[in-house]
Image (cartoon, rainbow, N blue to C red; front, side, top):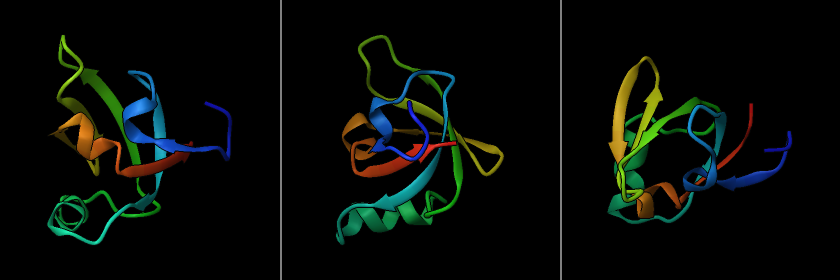
Length: 80
């Protein structure tokens, strides 16, 4: 992923680290993602994907978090 390019979290490769730029939406799911620590400016690393691609395992704020691919698609990230 090129520096400064915004993509969704579900599109980065396993092992890549990115910075959360925005959580899209204003519903309960978006609020829950923010409550879990996926706030703008935070670094997140994609640790792994389940065999069929869902869920995704993330490392954020020193802990591991698993979220659905559809939820990860709502999180805009940039390289670094």
